[in-house]
Image (cartoon, rainbow, N blue to C red; front, side, top):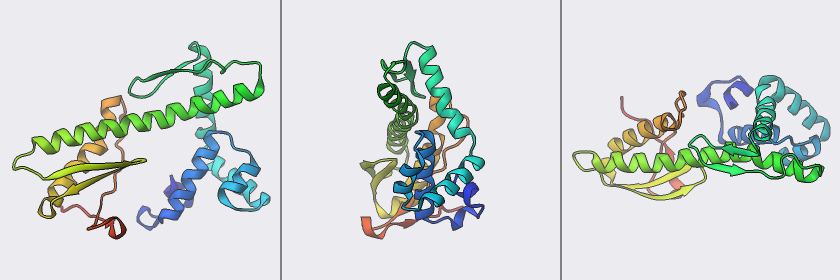
Length: 204
């Protein structure tokens, strides 16, 4: 999305630009007002108006997506499910109390987006571990941490190329397990410690 918004090549997008775009996505999805956007982006009121207008022109489907989620929830008995089928009820989605209803609407959208992302990440953990364990010859790679949408492995140095290929392939395809047809781009970074991680380019 940062590539489309900024209209620049993908390999030139900086982490800061990706983070800024991600904040704009969430602000649009959850219906953040102009003053909230000022806080998020640390810009003036006029700049926030311009940014919001530009972003909504580039990605008009974001706002409609949020409205569709709320509408579906109201029509299905205040019930929603994630991509992988986890269900949650939102009892205040049709409340006469504006504050309760608005809060529930934001929760509904957040559940579909973040809940589905959590499902995908957990599915990726399971599938990558299965593939790494079943690979022959043995690949020494141990899953250590999940940090938001990132997974951290400890991998024996000589096994990095093989492990990276398996992890990237499995993670990019795990969406199909939940009914997604589009691949999920995955970036692999490698380093001897957390402070020295660098983008890893898989061998051809």
